Image (tube, rainbow, N blue to C red; front, side, top):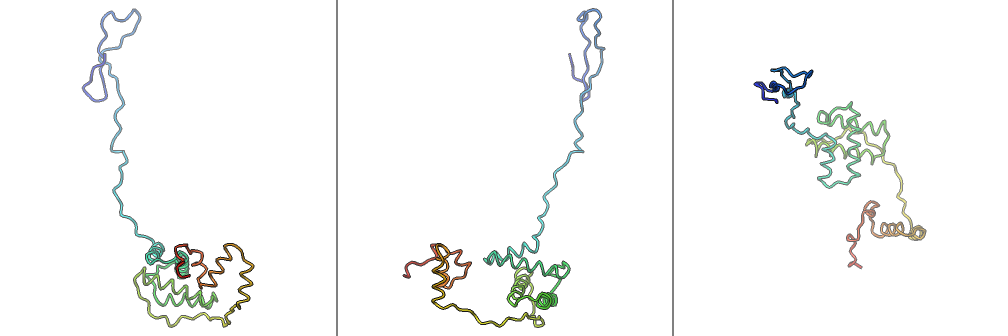
Length: 206
């Protein structure tokens, strides 16, 4: 029979009754202690850390958020993020908040001189940087007078005659023909035509 010990994790065996064991059997000695495993040291347990403050959003994530708050398109968002990333890499990964009009002028001029980009491409990069400084960093850039502007090519617009348009539409079938007819008759842009829904059409006008 095991009885409780004075200290935690140990017990004392009582002497067996006389004549309980047969001849030759070995009885347990009195006061023999049985050791039980001790509880683990709670000081070594890993404790959960307290709540840490959330990290501020990255610059490009702020650009995406600002564009979506103004209901900008995804294509505009992708274009702006790409130009801002190129602007940062051009100046050795400096933060735009540490730069200003001189750095913007140098970047835009390099696009026209070294990159030989079109005027529309340079204007797109300028729009992206103006959006960054005005709506994300809350900084107003002065008028950029020293920017080397890309030259616009001189070319006459090509306008098809009605017979040529009719010949092109005749060769189309199904959805492409419907889209071409809408583009020609309403003046919609291609992306606007792709996103056109039935509820956007006013059938009462006809």
